[in-house]
Image 1 (tube, rainbow, N blue to C red):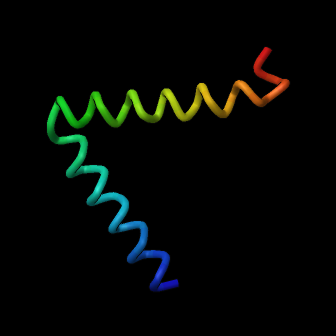
Image 2 (cartoon, helix red, strand yellow):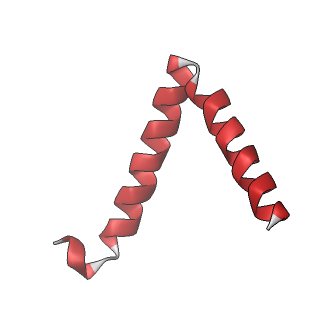
Image 3 (cartoon, rainbow, N blue to C red):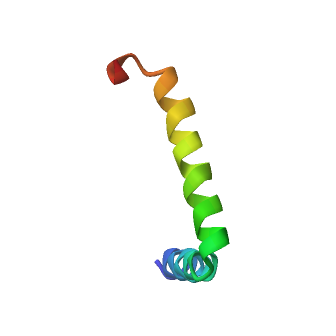
Length: 47
C-alpha cells in the first residue's frame, strides 16, 4: 500500500512539473493525442 502511494505521489509531482510550462504542456498533450490516435487505428470500435 505504501508503494502505491509513493508511485502516485511521484506521478502527480511529475505531471505538475511538466504542466507548469506552456511549451512542455503543449508537447505533452500532442504526444498523448498521437498515442491515442495510434491506439485507435488498430481498434475496430473507433470507426
